[in-house]
Image (cartoon, rainbow, N blue to C red; front, side):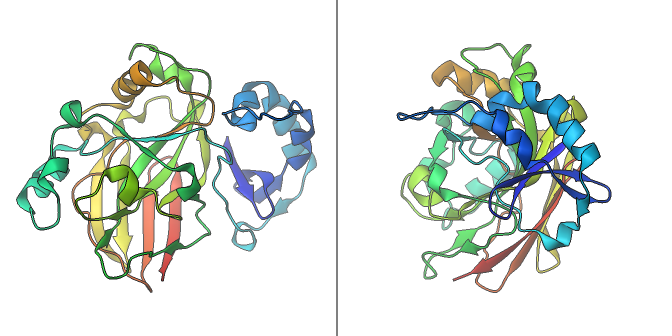
Length: 284
């Protein structure tokens, strides 16, 4: 199943004939009062809501996909956890460009660990990346994004995939410089998620997904998740050893070689097999 949020936070299911509006099922979500939970209610409820969603699809008429605005398919992630230098060739290109990549930030992931991105940086595929510091180099990074489906605390890699709700394309937009990663990568609009959430039953094995990114038609990045240094199950094991991962938490798995600058006026197209494509504009 491919779930999206569109327009004014309506819930949709992507089918071959378009988007099916299934927003009515959201009425079944539990009412919450302040203080609100630190997780995404919809993602947490997906297993229980799935029969109602499937019935709502059957009763709805499709809306053309090109007529909707796609938002982030996760509205309220508690946290965005990201993996730095998790592809060998990206580590090698980072070491080879000391003028771009700070020495303090070029280490193997097992040494560097993970980092957090602000949830306020999150946008959907129909929104634009807004360059905040045009005087500095800002780069694209395409990644497989993993959305956690249930509370995940110190799980083993053997059990890790059973905690996944689904997958999406992630763009980790980055200002280069000596500051901490979380600062440079948490700027408004600098985390793109989309175009939708593909439920984990459609991707039982995320370890062999080809993906790519081009800018204005020029291919910049092309790789396969089989080249990850730490695989998706290993990353979940690693992350959950430090944090309790909650429904809706997003895990960005790392980017391959080929990262490069983007500028206002550019258009990025990213593709991941079994998920789809996103086209994202860059503006100042």
